[in-house]
Every structure is written in structure tokens, then in C-alpha cells.
Image 1 (tube, rainbow, N blue to C red):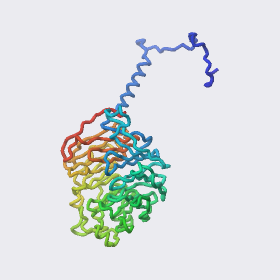
Image 2: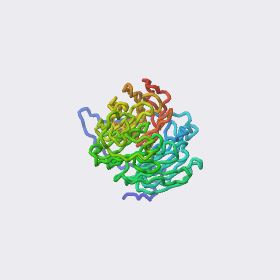
Image 3: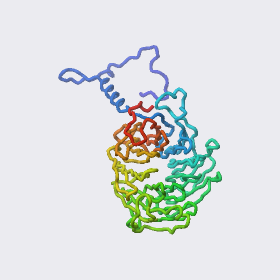
Amino acid sequence: MAVSATDSTPDHPEDEPQMLNPDEAAEEIPEDADGDVPMDSDDENAEYDAEAEELEITNDSKAYFDKHSDSIFSIAAHPSDPSIFLTGGGDDVAYIWTPDMPANTEDANITPRESKTIVRLSGHKDSVTAAAFTNPDGAYAVTGGLDGKIQVYAQAEKWKKTAEAQEVEEINWIQPHPTAPLFALGANDGSVWIYSLETGGLEIKQALYSHTASCSAGAWTSDGKILCTVSQDGSFYAWETDSGRAVVALTSADQRFAVEGGLYSVTVSPSGAVAVVGGATGEMRVVGLPSSTQAASGAQRRGAGRPQAGGGGSTGGGQVGQIIASLHTHSESVESLCFHPTQPLLASAGVDGKIVIYDAARGFPVRRTLEDGHKEAVVKVEFVKTDGWILTSCSIDGTLRRWDVRAGTELGCWKGHLGGNQSEGEGGILGFVQTKDRVVTAGDDHVSLVFEMTGLATGGGSVAPTVGGPALR
């Protein structure tokens, strides 16, 4: 009879030797030609060694943050304090944290070291899909989630929650205004909202409803006077911030603009003259925007038309609302777009694993294609904010890379996330932010890693970092 799990009485006294029934000890040993029988322990040791070998990973990071218990979907860097970061994840929480203060004193000299939590931000009932600090000084942290809720935290009050609101079912993205304490968000119902924190309270500045499907991305002009948004319905709108008026409106009804599967990415040139949108099938469109003067004077809203002679490039040529270029260099969805802050260059990244560089001064012809690095979808590309030629990229393959786009060469590859150490691509990088000396990642493996870039040349050189650091703790 089996002994009940609640029965704690031993079958024998502790000081009495345990007897084994000889019948239970019988074992049948198969005969072979040599009479040798493999030892069970040999198989166990081999299995153990194989498992140990599989768990060996490379980690090139200097610090890590591992308080999230699910994928990290959003990440932001404080605009005036480069030691503070904000992350939000699938565990329904956000954290403000710093890698410059180790969590434990004894870990100060360990690499990679554990980062310190400044504050845990709770209150969301679903994944925190968007997070941002407001400009220009990071006075507020804003989080948005799949629960449709916005939460605002004030730095002056030690990141205490000071406001919240819920106007939509799900929030896809949040973009802070470049110069003022405002932010915009896009929702799954297609609506676009602009909120102000200028008085300390959360005030709706604009509510915009022209998209008919989920609003997938948004980008401001550098002066913050125009907000550009795209949708899964294939539409593009450029909104005047103060009035809420659409100064450019393009939809898939115009076959010249239509992109099958809808639009998922958008960026604006530093001059604010053009916007570039990317879609599900790898197609891109370059659209002329009004200048700040035109927007302020009430430029008439325009749809797509034929490009005018002498236009194109990064200047837009005065072609407000015109389709300046149609590009199809990717075979799958365009996930990220970025203009260089000082050079006439545009970079695009796709699910096909390619990064493409375009000459924005000459009508956007392809200048370079970088396809020998990442092995999976490239999630984000961003130029380093210097006068150099360096581009940073991250991928579902779990690697962070930097490129010299002038020479078309890879400057370095950094690992640490699971996707970068396993062939399956699990645990890849979902995003990153850059400061002067660092790149900080958001990992699908629930970890944020801090990579130091001080040893890398910033002027387009070929200096590569040392890789192959200690395994992740």
C-alpha cells in the first residue's frame, strides 16, 4: 500500500538499517559481444555537459536591468540626465532605473553589474507598450498601455503619479514633443491625441479621428509644429499641432500612394520638408510637407499629385502633399526609418533583415545595402547624433550592431540577449535608445542591457569593440 503524502511516520526507525527485498533488486543485464555494459552515469554526464555547453552565452554589456518578468516593449532615455532610463513591459509595469548606481555595493566592480531601481511604476492592467520622458528637461515620465490608460509621473515629486487618463481601448505609441512638455499618442481605433502638461495637469490639446484603422506610428517635425501619423488602413496625415488641421492627407484610395497591408513606420527629415512612410510589403513613399511658414499661414490641405520638376531630395522642392518618390527596396515590412541629423541620408530597416541607405539629396536612390549582418528582422535603426557616418541597429536575432554607412562596413557586433546566443532568434532586441557614450536595449528576454561605446571611433573609423565578455548573471 502506498504511503500517503501526509503520513510522516517512517517505515523503520532511523537507527535501524534499511533492508532491500532481493526480488526488487533483480536487474536483467543484456549480453553483448564484449560483455561490456555502458554505465548510466556516463550518459548522465554527457547530457549534463551538453546542457552546460548550451547555456554558455556571450555578454558584452557593462550593466543590466532584470526586474521585468516579461518582454520589454518600450524604452526611453531621460533628455537631460543620461544616467536615467524608463522601460515598460508585458508584465504591466514600468521602471525608472539607473546603471550608474549598482544595486548592491559588492557588485560595483563586477561586469556586468546590476542596475538600481529608482522607482517601480504600477497601475496598468495590461502591457506597457509606450513610454517617454517629456522634453526639454524630462520633468515628466509618461506611460501608455494596452489597457488604454495614460499615467504621468513628476520628477519634482520623486516620480509620484500626478495624472492619469483613459480615452481609448489600446495605446500603440507615445511620442514626446521635441521642445515642449507635450506628447502625442496613437490608438488602436485610429485616433490620435495630443496632450499638454504645460500647466502641470494633463490636458487634451487635440483629438484627431481621420484614420479608419489602428494608428501604427507617429513622428514630429523638429520644431514640433507638425505631427505626422500613419495607419494600418494605408493613410498618412500631417497635422498642425496648434489647430489640429490636416495640412497633408493621403490615403490608399489614391493608387499612387497605396501600399498593400497598410503603413507601419514614419520619419520626418531634419528640415521638416519631407516625410517618409514604410509599409507591410516593403514599399515606401516620400511625401512633401509644408514649411513652418506655410503651416502657420494656413496652407491648403493637399492630396497626392504629380511631382513637380526640380523638386525631390531632402528639401521637398515646395511639393506640399506630393509623392516625391516611391521606393521598394525591402521584400517585407519596413519596421524603422531614420534620417541622419546632419547628412542628407535616410536609413530603412525591414523584416527581411536588410538595412538600406538612401541619398536624400538626389531623389532617394540607394546608396548602400547592408545585408550581411543581422540574421533576423531588423527592428530599429538610428544614426548616431554626431557629424560622423555611424548607424546603430538592433534585431530579433538578439544582436546590436554599428555600421560605417560611408564604407558599408560593420564596426562592431554586441551580444548579451538570448537571441544573439541562440540560433532560434528567441529573446531578441525590441528597441534601444542612445546617449553620448551608451546604447541601452529593450529585450524580449525580459532584460535591458547597457553597452558602453566609448572605445568605438565616432568619425567613421574602423575601430571595432572587444567582444566576448562575461556571461550574463
